[in-house]
Image (cartoon, rainbow, N blue to C red):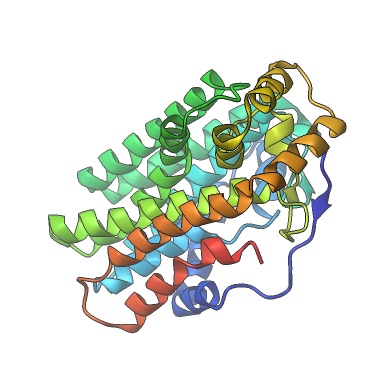
Length: 337
């Protein structure tokens, strides 16, 4: 399969600005996560320690903290607890994803399923979700409980929908967007809407914050999928060609299929019908991807969602929080550099 490439030293400044803005609370989020995952079962501790220490930028937690701060939430620790909850949902889905995808590497480290097996990974993922629901119940806000519960269901539906379309080189763009909306954007949207709920915002503000998160998530996932076909780009833990070898049809391949000749389309369909795709198959696909500028076009589509995301915040009063959150929309695209 593809090679793992390291992270470039510089990161988008808006991400660092948001992190610095709420860093004192993000530290407490990490403490809540560690406290919630305490278990007398030694294997659970080993696996959760390994899984959570392998990196990650805590984007979803930062979005919850940043959104609540934007709208004036100040008192109490609910933002900290619910940010931890959002991160636990994400961590659980990653454990399940790695089992489904039979992944060996994530963020440059061996995946828990590669070390301890699929059965343990599934069960520990379930353990994370159960801890998450404990936090929600203790918080006691029915609106947030419904929001995060339905989001967990959406993520699962997205996984199943992706499995349903596995190996379909002729997947239509509408179905692809439906998959990434469920799998990725729904949790981004839930993170930002949770922030608005914490601040006691009205429905209009909640809907706009949700739109901001959703479209940011769509741009984030499209950019990530595009990187899978761009071997010159540098991203930590990004396994080039991973989606291709797993038979996942993402936007670069959809654009390629839309633009290719009849013969090239037949070739694409045959390649994705295989049980296993080879490095030679990948090299040929990369040539076609480059021929039709499918990666560049994917980033253009992502930029559309970036602009929609940024515009969703336009009605809010100017503030440092607003400026940082609007700037963050470019982070999903700048990861390609």
